[in-house]
Amino acid sequence: MSGLLALVGGGEFLPPCRDLDRELLTASGTTEVLVMPTAAAFEHPERVVDRAREHFAPLGATVRALMVLARPDALDPDVAAVARASRFTYLAGGSPMHLKSVLKDTPVWDAVVAAWRDGGVLAGSSAGAMVLSDPMVDPRGGAFTLGLGLVAPLAVVPHHDTWSHDRAQRTVQLAPRGLAVLALDTSCAALRFGDGHWEARGRAEVTIDGRPAGLDALP
Image (cartoon, rainbow, N blue to C red; front, side, top):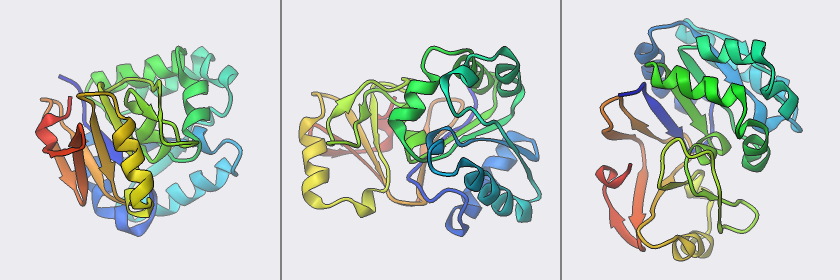
């Protein structure tokens, strides 16, 4: 058993995600969202936090920023304590490679996982969704690299509605045999509940070995 996991296809903190985030808030039992703009460390992360505050305010929630922007931040035990106490943590989008390099094998990542396993809500959008799986799609070419492996074996393709047919097919063709590839359109999500079952919010497609599969094929 664990908490609720939300893999979001991008477009976080914008109106199309409002119903989804209302559902996540209800599941968390809290009115505070811990936002980690790590993946946007080089793209004005403070703007990500500001957008999150504007987005969650009408939902009756406040946003607390956890500015884990470089690896030394993720090694700080005080920062890890904040992550461990969170009931709703949100990994925003940006660079999945930077996000992974900052969090992998750190106290903050361990704290995020522990909070989720203790029943908290964990959401990752775009880059945030990509790194939670393993293997992870490498955005530089569509092949595969190591992710953080919270759910595995699984690869997540966010913003699938913006991908060309050729790019999407290349990723499917490069997928290791038997690997589930979860393609999420922008502002759509796949939710993994504490008992392990999955539900879609919007368009979410699963393929294994190039053939369509259902959400029940996900780990």
